[in-house]
Image (cartoon, rainbow, N blue to C red; front, side, top):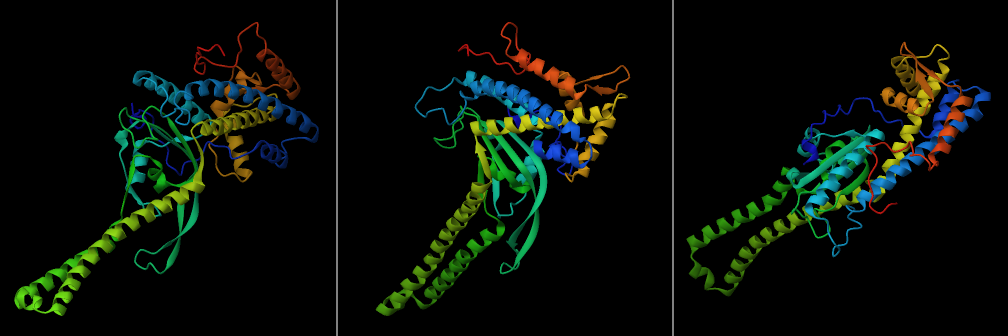
Length: 429
């Protein structure tokens, strides 16, 4: 099953508002104070609430990481020794499907969005700002997931196509974060270091839209027509000169030329010079190809954030922070609505206006997800007419404290893992 062929809904355009909250916990509290939404006597309780919710979400995230690592340890290319035992094709496929399903859940929690096949093929048809034209074999992948987060632009300097002695500054749209997860089809191996039995995870930063295809492993560098012409012209002109000289030789006669030693040396010089054109053109082709690859490697050296198991840690940390911020925002704005409560649509509008007023741009706050988390943690409840009402902070702290104590009650099952998150383990840990 190739993930790109799935039935996921088409991704929104890159100009659409982001779900991601570009905040830290400290910045969230600071923006609330600046907006006059926190009274001086509420600051201590707000800090306590944030710390208790942070601990709660961290516990849940740690539990999920523990179970997800159990699966990924059997697929991690950094742990699969080249001479060690390999999983059977059937078992590896089952583990990969199980892992990819849970990994995709983490990406959505961290507010990444899926790039569908159309977007990737569109990127593949566009030249990179580095002049790289890769060709991608999408049929080589058993699974391929590309997720992005954060839209923006930065400036780059490049030489003008028709006037290469001059430089111009262009604005390049980019993704702030880009995640690539893939596994190859059985029997398709790029090198000894890349095998079809493993799942590869890559995390990048500030990747231009047109360069997404350069990050995929099954891509080959293709030269631009400008570089092809620059390489081919010396060869064609050299062959033309050689043909013209040979034509003259047929008119003068080989015997006359070979009769003189100096004439023979001149003949060898003409032939050798023409062959030199061909060798120079071939070396120019190799140098141009290596230049493309070196430029790409240098850029990705600074844009690569993490690989494989390290990507799991980063994304789970990001998902934990997003869950925390969404819950805190929803709870605090419901609390500030007072005893009359607030419905979900009005809550969504107020939070989005607050985020925009804080200078964070227009963010599409996922209010439905936020109120579900708030309700699960028993911080608020909805009344019969559809309005949310929050518990006072003191009661919310008591509720969270009671729930925290229950997490370590071994006389009953923990309320944390859901059936979709639980993974059976044979080692009893």
